[in-house]
Length: 199
Image (cartoon, rainbow, N blue to C red):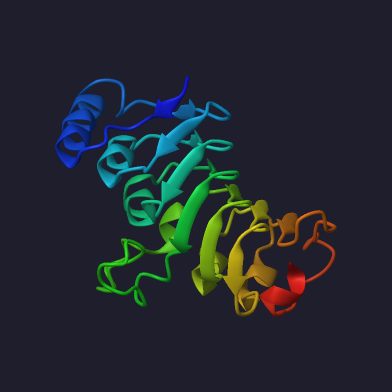
């Protein structure tokens, strides 16, 4: 496989989402297109059709632009494993639902919970390394109560590592540095550190 995985136009994306939702999309639990030379953006309409998804792996392709975080948070309550590594996704990770800026694709700022990390309370793996994400690591990640693996290295994050990550009792592997040792929080509490020092 090569080339765009998703329809290029908004109209085609909406038609595809409707067809997917009414057929296999609403029942799909596992989707991996890892290492397939795929490119383009991931439209929100497609993600909204995958409401039953538990495992999503888009790793090692050439996807670019913002990732539709808000749709994932609001519409994938069963998601346990999200792997976006090795692409060219860009932009900031979504802040908490109460803090989002309108129109940034991350959260809508109305406080209704559709941008909350707590909506992804089944998530165990969040693998985002080697992309072009930037900005601060959101404090809302501390609400991912079942998270066991978090990989953020190879991006352009700034600021500090949020305190809340140290209180995630299940988090066993946390990597912010390419090639660096894995932090095991079951033995050592993560202390806030400046992200640039962890690269």
